[in-house]
Image 1 (tube, rainbow, N blue to C red):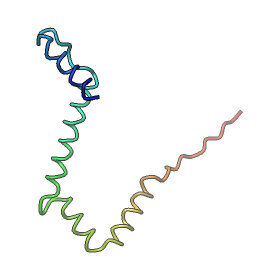
Image 2 (cartoon, rainbow, N blue to C red):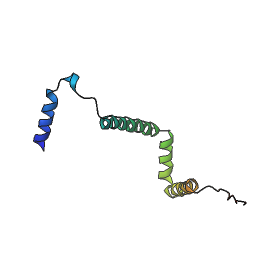
Image 3 (cartoon, rainbow, N blue to C red):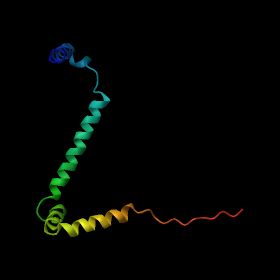
Image 4 (cartoon, helix red, strand yellow):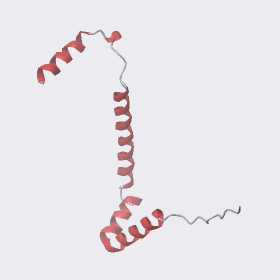
Length: 92
């Protein structure tokens, strides 16, 4: 397997830079995903600084984990519950 990779690498080195094909869609997608994940990581790191919301939430969760679990459960129930839609009766 290593010989195949070396052969492919040497074949790519023989192609002049102006004749190399553009990046593939997969490479462009991979770069976009890397950039998005870095943005999310930066946002999480900023939120974990002392006094920021994620730091406060983590501190409160450490102090009372059962209350935090109950609140998370009730929040999940409220979000996932289907909304009431009145039944329309058809009149023929």
